[in-house]
Image: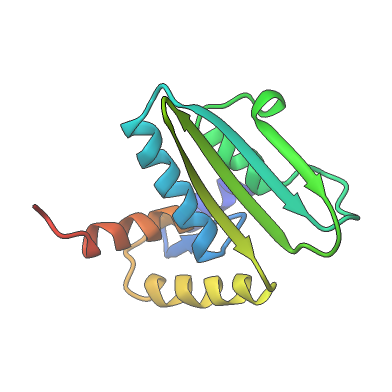
Length: 147
């Protein structure tokens, strides 16, 4: 319901919708999709760590599983310990090697910094509904040299 309202609003202005607004986690999301495309037969596991009193599963970990087409019940591993703000790791198991993509939120300030980063990008964005992933993909396109 709320997403429909955002889509309608996006016909009049630029709108950002992103459940996790940290730059790092969205970079991890994009990088993991690229890696899965390169190594589609890899075994993939997601490990998420949060503070001891966090009851529910990490929405970010569930999004990672969804984006990678993984069954949440089988591939999301949760750890609750101490005062961890939030850590997410995606492990790609390949024959004879393992690739680990890791993001650690050390402070909740990362969310505010992500909001500022997104706001600066949105200044010149045309009408439409955007996610932080869209912003990171745009940055990839602008900053990867063409060979």
